Image (cartoon, rainbow, N blue to C red; front, side, top):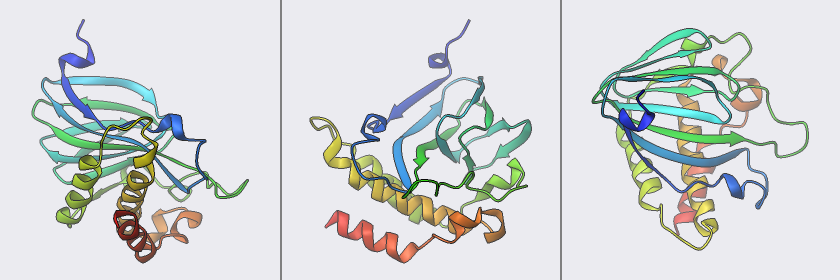
Length: 202
């Protein structure tokens, strides 16, 4: 029986899950990211998402079942998979994709929205196509290039969280506003996030 290592090669970033309670609560909490290259056709068995995941396909073919809905991604398509959704990946040789894992945390008790998306949104509506590839590749490269080793990883957490925050909010702006949960759509402020990331780099 083949193992996942037989069908994919994965390079993962620093994992920050252990730091989740060490800093103030952010609305977005970056956990990790990876660049996956599929080396042989295979299936990643059905599982329930623990964290939120963004899948960005940059080469080849990828499809999945998301809560029983079949979804196919073409190059530069992107899919947000929500925590709690049932997900099964169908992987094809030559596929190259980026994945980002994150949590949404309340700024104050009882303020966490139940979903990124509005009630009634279907899984296929969680997919979108990226036109501005250069913007995202710039941020992804910075996220990867800042993946340095340190004593406990903490010194780079704010930088990575800020970079991912810009990626996430930019992605949300690409969805029709009626697709997003009202708590999420009311808090998207790209200018504020862009200013934050420049201050972090400085």
